[in-house]
Image (cartoon, rainbow, N blue to C red):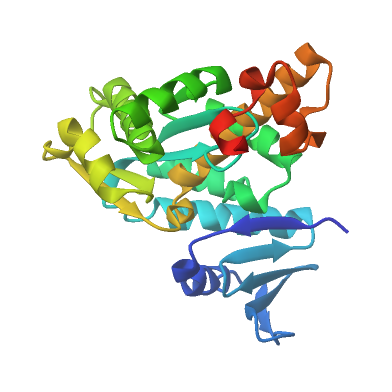
Amino acid sequence: MTTDVFKINKNKIQKLKEVLLQDPNATLIESLNKYEDFRIKYKEGIVVGYSSGKIVTNNSIVAKYVGNTIEWIETEEKDYSIMIGSDEAGKGEWLGPITISAVALSPEQSGFLMSNGVMDSKLLHVTKIIELAKIISMNCLSLKVLHISPLRFNQLIQEVRDEGKTLNDMLAWAHATVIENAYDEIKNQPISNKIRVVIDEFDKIKTEKRLWRIQKMSNISVEQRPTAEEEIAVAAAGIIVRAKWEEEVDKETRRLKIDLRSLSPIEAKQHPDSRLFAKISFLH
């Protein structure tokens, strides 16, 4: 038995249930526990919707049925033409780089990526992240990545602190850079509605200051909020940065001929090339 998992905004669970049940082959059946919002029998399969927004199916026919429905819901009556989402990876880890990405999607692309399993990268295995990163790169309007290697980070963080600033100042600059680069790539496309920019909130004031150029434009709305990965553009950016982070750690592992992921912070501090793969200030 195969299992396919989707993740949608939990506010759309009821909408998904209603649309699924419009199919004559779909029948609502009894839920098995309090976490299930609905359980539907479709032909010879089952789809279960959880109150968290997770959707689970048990065969490829049901998965296609659910995926197509999710794609339709995501593209219906959108009040924006393009969404740009940004996210970062590596900011809380001593190992590896900090990677920041912005992904621009049309509503149709958002629906397609969601129906293909794009969701918060924290819910995905690394092999799935790498697989989805390839799908995202081929199904987006723009994809921009800013990569801060550990060596460069070790230099920058000292400069930032000498100026009386923090890591959040660096991150605000990085997010603003990739978002503006993504916007510059798509700004000449025919746009009927607004462009939405959504960022997973970490320091609202500093990020707003960095985004002054695009925030003053009348056709752009900027939103910073927690759990922004519920938006597919932000989830897509999260998958891209995690795949890039893994790629860079793998590259250094091969170059140094040592399994970097197995090192303890103490071992990393003692390694002669630690500045090439570790954020030194994080080790302390």
